[in-house]
Amino acid sequence: MLNHTSLGESGPEVAFCHGLFGQGKNWTGIGKAVADDHRVLLIDLPDHGQSPRSERFDYLAYADQVAELIDAEGGSHDPVALVGHSMGGKVAMLVALRRPDLVERLVVVDVAPVAYDHAVEFDGYIAAMQAIDLETLERRSDADEALREAVPDPMVRGFLLQSLRREGGASGGWRWLLNLELLGRDLDLITDWPEERLAGVAAYEGPVLWLGGQRSPYVRPDYATAMDRWFPRNRRVTVKDAGHWVHSEQPEVFVEVLRRFLEQHV
Image (cartoon, rainbow, N blue to C red; front, side, top):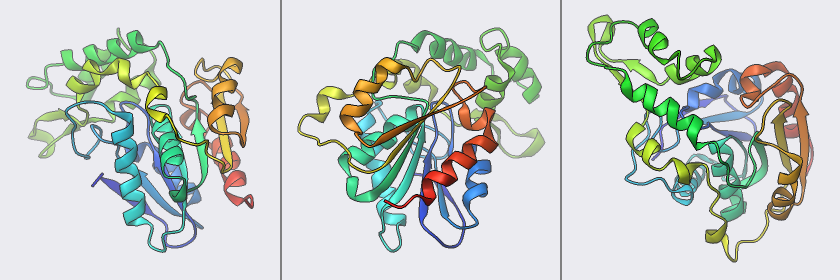
């Protein structure tokens, strides 16, 4: 079973799927903002955080594990609102397509059901993380400095370093909460979309919020055809002054838009 954190005591359930290199706690701020009237599930996807490791990256296998968790945690077994960013957005889309009984509504954050050609950028991140000698690493600031050349954006570096953990207190060793070997080897699969494996799968007919950052290259007008094909009831919203990490760059706007969508009647 996937590792997860639960917030909130009552209300409809909202489940969050993080992006590549992330973990469920990346959604903590957003989750707390809606937990006063929702039950919130923050999920560590496979090969990330404290969830089990895989031998090969497989979007459908990831989606099946998320579906299994939602089914097990559903309580009353009412369908959930499912939110996913980037890689997690693709996972969330596949859960909705293959298990629509589990998903009452869907929020797709800064990604589309298409193949991307951004592997080179991510490959540099992985190589830089793997190059850090964890045996001799003394401080997190040293890891930050080691990543600076490959990851010049301080926000992105901070995001990556959230998955660097020190075990056993100040004198303990460091480890990545990421299956870096698999993520690096299967990067082409991560940036892909498993279109050919969805033969016979019907479009998802529930309401979909398609949320993108104004400065992000991940949501473009020409991707609308693919989105409309799989999610005909999608509504696109663009967040100003935001890039790919919309919920981190504009959290207040993100929460407001998310809340409005969650409160809409089907």
